[in-house]
Length: 181
Image 1 (cartoon, rainbow, N blue to C red):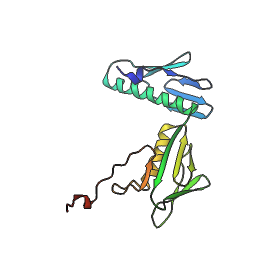
Image 2: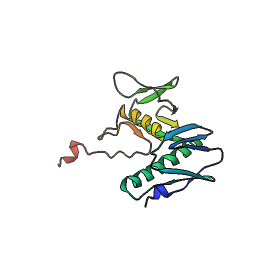
Image 3: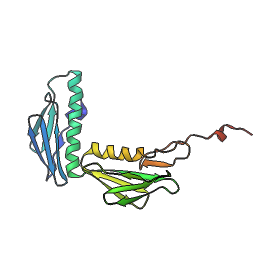
Image 4: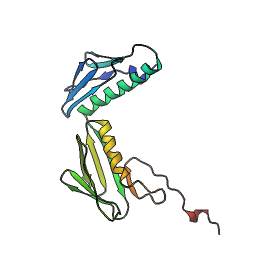
């Protein structure tokens, strides 16, 4: 039994869902998302809910059932509310500046790192050390946050670097921790 696949997806006011075969287009006040799913899954609109059903209890169908349900729920949430990921710059002298739609990061390298946002994603700053990545497509927002984090991953010994706001960096003890007096 797929709990994610069996879950009904509520359609909020102002969101329209159009199904054309295996292609689903979701439109809301934040934008439009379109995705093509496996034609083995059947997607139905029942009033103000969307239901995904599978043809059999085959392992592949169970997997596709949950995946399709989760992707549809993310599409509906994205066009209605949107998604946001926040990143923190931790370290002395680490800061960010806006340059048009791009970001310029100073991360302790001999050069500045310029971040160009992916289509459908907006980057904004809160102060000089917090970056917000906003968009309607959850996958694109996550990919952009991962690209920014990849510019300077958190150091395992000092904790310096770019990290997600809710990320907990476990610090390793240095070599002095192993010494005994």
